[in-house]
Image (cartoon, rainbow, N blue to C red; front, side, top):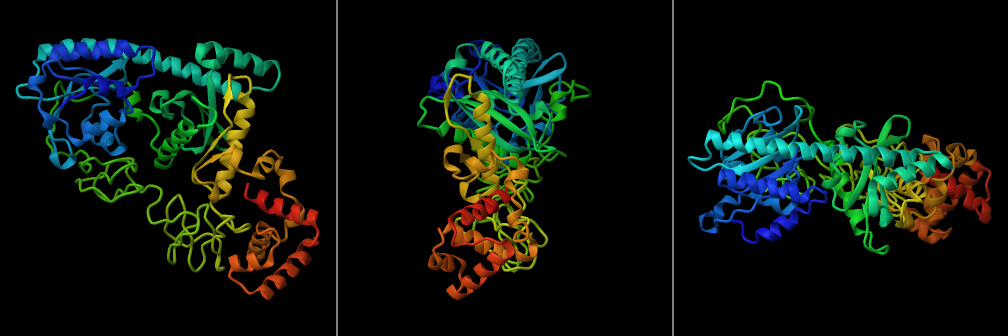
Length: 536
């Protein structure tokens, strides 16, 4: 079961100064209870894995799908988390016994030791429940060790909160002495890590303004600090500082952005209110609950929140797979991005809602954020998605789905304000143009590098105001495709699927509506930028 214990423990990759302390304390619990234990934070992210020396007594069948995934990926899915939380572990102050449920992928029973500090749950110690299992005296002694773990986790959480505050101060400070002071504070907090190579990531919009609902830094490999910031008038975004090894390899940043987008689409936040609150009337000591109780149904074996195979019973679906067969639904396992959709140009018959992917008329287009019931946005036109330009200008496209932007890598912290401008600009471009993908790099967003830097009143030039009225949405689309094709009539007509004479007729109407001469290079540039800026 625990072959390659050292490799498995290294896989946890705890990036905390307390890493050795956690492993020692988990090993202490393993020795007290005579069984290997694992430590996870309250978001079910693996922190430490206790070794078990008596290899002859290990049962290979103990590695059920849920335990395997937790160890190998260092986290559990939203469905798995909801299933276990259904046994009251977020409120418990004593050990909780969870019975085996094979249909949920839980082949062996568990004992959960809540890790609390000053009434707040910070994590859980897990071990497999054997017959007869640990005695009450052994469990009481183990709970004493969890109290020491809770103090360490609370200290680490406070340090993470301090880093979030310092990063937020840097990204919101006025240029000048305020910015210099904020950078100095963050540099002091980070220590030697401050001088390394970093990339700044923006995920927008983020589903919660509550700092407690932001993921922990440990949840994102390579993360140095993160914080939430305002996005527009009412929304929020997430800023993430990621360590890099090479300025030419942005994989750590794009991977982190993708993982956070998964979380943002699911709206899962970090910890539930129950998990953060003080322990109230939890279950009795070693509370047991039958598999057929009132809790959530099991998730399918190896089930996920959309990153692997399908999960959790009922109607929950994952972003890339089928549904599970559990007896009930688990929170966070609802529809995820990609179900019944197709990239930029995919269409959903009849009722698909356009979300960053074009207009929905007779054949409403669908996109990253999944289809929605009702009539498609954009009215009754025959709108489709231009394969290069994404949504059609002037059609009221829904841009509410999350996207991410990645800034140019930098060493040190001096240019973080500029990096944040780049990351947020790339995120805005990704929200505006589906072709940039859900994760856009600032270096690849073309003219949006300039457009995002303009004040809204400047970017939205009045020359295109009439053309962008809903009644002229087909002409606006024609103009954008024509300009995207560098004024080549044959290419534009082919992409629009119309005769060239029809194109010439539309172009003449566009010139009358705008007062521009489309044979003039500067007029073309002005109209092209106005159409692109309208997306922002």
